[in-house]
Structures are given as C-alpha cells and as structure tokens.
Image 1 (tube, rainbow, N blue to C red):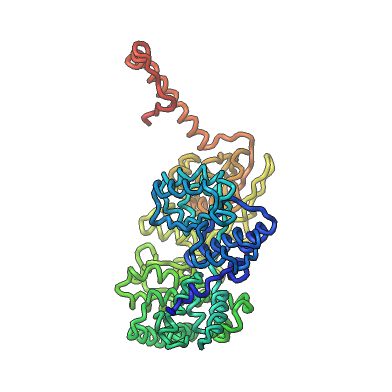
Image 2 (image 1 turned 180 degrees about the horizontal axis):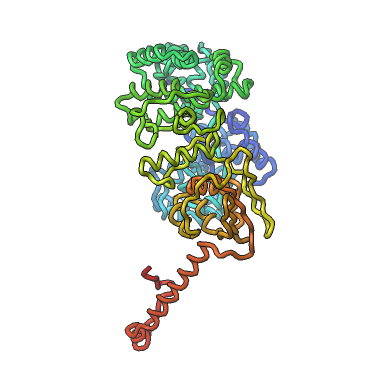
Length: 606
C-alpha cells in the first residue's frame, strides 16, 4: 500500500475531531440539531485552516443514513463515499480552473434534478472569488432561491473579491488562523499515535513556520520526519527551515543590556560568516522584543513548556520597559530601512549601535560639535525616534543654560524674559529678524510660560498674572507695530495650522502693555482649546520678544480677519457675477441661443 501523507491521513472526519475552529463548529452543530438549515454557506479563511474539510463534514451531516445530524456516523455508504470523494450527490468544483459562465450554467442545469441517492445535492465551489463576473451573475438567482434539495457551500481565501450580491445570499463563517499552541498540541497527538519520536521545541518551530495553517504544519512535519530519519528533532528542523539560532538573538540582547559594542559587532560578524540574513534577523529581534514585552506585563502568558521561558523572563527583568520599547521601535525602523544601507551588514550593525546610542531613560546628552549637525540643528540620521528628539532638546537646553549670551543679570535661575531678550539680541546682531525664530529652537526649560488662557463668556475674562520676578513692562522695548491684527495673522502666523485658524477667527479688542485682549465668536469657540491658546500665546511672545498676557472673551459677533476675508470674497464674487451678466456678448448668447450660465462656474480673477 502506498504511503498516505499526514495531511490526508489525519484529515478530520467529524466536527468533534476538527481543531481550532470551535466557533464555526458550534454554530453549525446547533443549526443541524435544530434543523435550521440555510441554503448557502460561505467559508472564508487562509489556506489550510479547514474550509474543504468542513464542507465535507457538513455534506455528511446532511446526507448521513441516520438523518440530519451534527454527528454523522461515518460508517454508512454516504459518509464513506464522501470521505473518499466518490459520492455522486456531493460535487466539489474548483473555480480557479472552472471559472467561466459555461461551467456555471452546466452546474446549475444539473442542480434542478433530484438527488440520485442522498437527501441533498451539495455543491462545493472552492476559491469562488476566481469566478468571472458573468459566472457570478448566472448563479445569483439560483443561489438566492435554489431547489429545496440543493445546498451550496462556497469557500474562498479572498472574500473581498466576492461580489456583495453573493455575500448577502450566504451564511458566512470566517475560519481563523490556528494558534501555534493549538498546532503544536495537535502535532504531538498525531506523532504520538504514529509512534514517531519528537522534541517539543521542534514542533513549536514547525507551528511557527506554518503561520496558522494546519495543513502546512502537517506537510512540514512530513518533511521533518523524512529529514530526521523517522524522528523530529529541533536541530534537524532548524536546519530544514533555515531558522536563525535563537541563542544569537539572546546574546545580542545581553550585549545590548551590558552596553557592549564590541560584543555586538563580534556576534554580527559571526552571523555574517554563517550567511544568516540580517533582514530576517531584525524581524526576529522585533518578535523577540515583543515576547519580552508580554513577559514584562503578563508573564503568565508565556507557556510553561516554552523552550526559552526562563531566559525570556530573565531578560524581561533585566530590561526596563522604556528601553525595551525603544529597542523595538529601532528594530522596526532598521528592518524598514536596511535596503537603503550601503549593505545589509552595515544596516544591521548601525541599527544595533543606534540602540546603544539612544536610551529612553537617559536624562543628559553630550552636545555634539557644530560640524556634526546641519545648519538647522537637525540630526543627519534618516530616522528620528522620540528618544533622539529628547536627547537633542536636552543638549540644546544645556547649551542655552551655559551660553554667556543667554545668561541674564539675575543670578542662579535665569529669567525666561532675559533668555528671550538675549536670543533676540543675538538674532539682531546676526541680521536675522526675530520673528523668524522657530519656536522649536527654544528649549522648554527657558520658554516663556504663560498661564493657560481661559475662554470666558462676555464680559468676564481670566488673565494670566505676571510673576513677581518678571521685570516691569517699561523695561522691555515694545516691537514696533501698527495694531493691524489681520496683517499680523497673515504675515507672521501663517504656518501655524489650526493655531492660525484660531487667530483668524479672533478680533483684537485691546493691546496695552503686556495684556492683549481678543474676542472670538460663539460659533468658533471650539477652536479655543487650551492647547491652541497656549501655542498662540507662545507665538505672540516670540513675535513681540516679550511675555504677553492673553485674555480671550467670547461674543455673539466679532469682526475677525476670517469674517473680513469672507466679506471681501463675497464682494468680489458679486462683482464678477455682475460683470458676466452685464456683458453684451453673454447677453446676446442668452437671448439669441438660449444659453444659460452654469451655476457656481463664475470665479473672480483676484
């Protein structure tokens, strides 16, 4: 007798023996027990999760000699014939090779006849999404109202390609990818009955490589049995799959924790000598970091029989959550950008060194020489993590705090206003106008810090008190300004996004000394969130070179720049419309040829 592969030999023949799809089994079993039968079923899911197997079990349940049941006997003529694929009233059609309208018409013509020996004619159309548009249209009516003796079972790996008109006529079940633990347990049971020696880590590797498909797992197990000469060993499976030895990954993480750059490079060289793919290695590092994060927050989620359970728990304890998350992000970005590196080795080692260079829990940073950054102070790295930004900001704050030009006359803690003045004078000395200074250049420690402005109903308003240590307003020269709020918004706040929208919908009521009072209409009050008000206040501080007190009132009506602009646009539109309507040529076309002007097609030139 010829050898039968495991995927066919151990194909489930009943609902009870089907693993990993309990939600579908329960629904179908209840429907069969209660005789609530649908005329069309749609099974969706990736390859090897049991769509065809489930179809055959359902066909046996409908045609079993014991009656319609959720537990077919498996011994009657119908059950045995369906199992071996010779039952005349159960037809499996591959839509990938029989996808035309002629094939569908032929099937539907046969469907009208009564079953030859069974209770129902069951038509199973596999990969139904491959049917042509015409074939789908041909089956629509029959699929909606088939003869009482016909049941349709459709299966597909790509339900998005199935027309909604077909989906709406079917009872749909989504078969899930199987968990690695489920696949491992099933393989252990099968190999135990086959009396084949195995190692649990080897089965876990196979389950991981199967990616949720039980058929793929059984096929890989067949291959492993042949490779290992009637035994499934971890070393053989690793060699067969070309899997990276996990010990390298653990050594890499230990070197990272110890901040051992030489050790990292040595391990990378060993991986290169063994021709291990660096791109897949970064992917495996990210997967391992994910496991460590799970071990940190839910150690009970790591299975007791996991071959590296204790190692995972030890590493999870040695790494802080912040560093782990940073390493994961850098590994993901390194995997994405490795194709842009000079070579894979350089991309891999630079990713590891980047993990050493930036630490999520560091509080200080070394200020790099001016030659190591571009003219805007930006890092030259292709990818910037939050840790990089934090380090750069800390270095910038340190440089401001230690700069002689930035030190005010007040000892110890520098006054925010003094810092802004020093920055202002530095910019003037360089010939660059102060209002072009980007707010990102001023560190958070030395920014002017206004209290959060509060939107109040008219006439009440809440203003920010001036701190006692701030110098009086008279000691700080006002930036020359003509009081044109609209020009200020359009010329100096044009790149602030929604903050500009807030300013456009505010009216300047009063500006005296350090206090600026604005008015916003009730209809735009939603723009005045605390976040945007603080950003607007900071932008105004930057423009005027002093710390201002921003007061916001609400009103039913306000003459804002946005309203002024809307009025001007409406006037221009009216003028353009009148010009077109009064044009003699246009009037002639309308009178003599019955021409009409398309609504909303008239646009002003300016």
